[in-house]
Amino acid sequence: MTFNSRYVTVSGRRLHVRSRAGSGTPWVLLHGLAVSHRYLMPTARALPGPVHAPDLPGFGRSAAPRRVLGPREHAAVLAAWMDAEGMRGARLLGGSYGCQVAVELAIARPDLVSALVLAGPTADPAAGVVRHVLRLLRDLPIEDPRQLPVVTAGALAAGPRRIIGTLRTAVRHRMEDRLPLVTAPVLVLRGRRDPIAPDAWTARLAAVAGCRTVTLPGAAHNVVTTAGPRVAGLATAFAAEFQDQNR
Image (cartoon, rainbow, N blue to C red; front, top):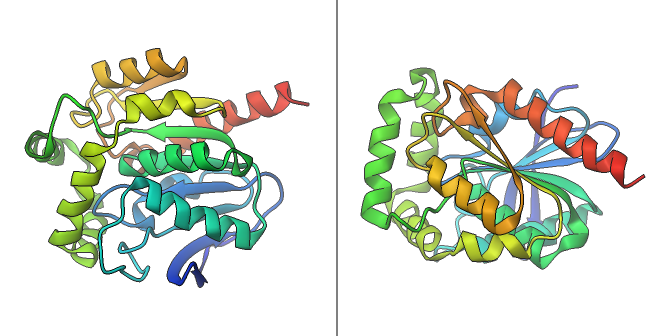
């Protein structure tokens, strides 16, 4: 089945969502900072069943709120959208900043989430805003250059004010304190060459939350783009494992 774009209005906000119909438990994919749903599509296409990839407010094709939203506010908008869709027990897959939004959604509304996959989660507290920008600059040369048009289009759509403002909310958000509050099973993924979500950081998340981690050889930060089929395979196997246990 093919993916279709649509617009929905929830909580007074106009959201763009790219979806594929299907049977089974739905996947909801959440993009990272300065990009849109487009960078999630290599993973989205490789996942089974129904898949939804919304653009967060102010990013991609979704309407921009006047002020910058933080992870909890983005999560509240997504929860309202999922309620409107009648969606329960979805599998969430976040990339980078999308991981922080996914965690807040899973904490606030555990009924909406049955499994959580975090790919390249931010934000490592060892780096503030400046060091995160420096890590991003280190990451760019080792990413696949073919993703540059998608990343550039996403950054232009969001604009520098929203990007920097959202980065500040990411750095203030204490992922290591919030993740242990998630009751759904969690899988953490990272590319072996990822300077933004380094091994020490993802190991710390695994330790505080008691969750599983997997490192993908050869990949950098944007694993959902450059290693989509591998990410989808790991995510599908992980979610199926816990679904089988709960039967």
